[in-house]
Length: 64
Image (cartoon, rainbow, N blue to C red):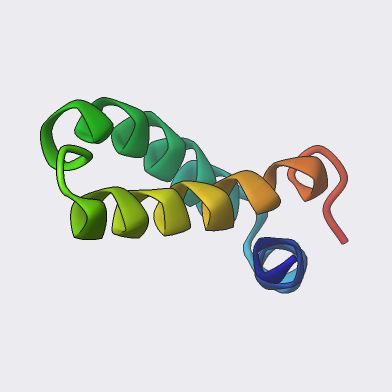
């Protein structure tokens, strides 16, 4: 839910930058699970990053 609110607010101001950040965060978080997801702390941090990024995906196609 937090990702929805943050992305919706950011998309109303800077569409291209927000979509780029969402895309990069999703693209980086998944491969990093192989390296950092071995520990509970690393996995939790990456899961939070991924979840916040993924929460913004529904808003990306329809800014404003």
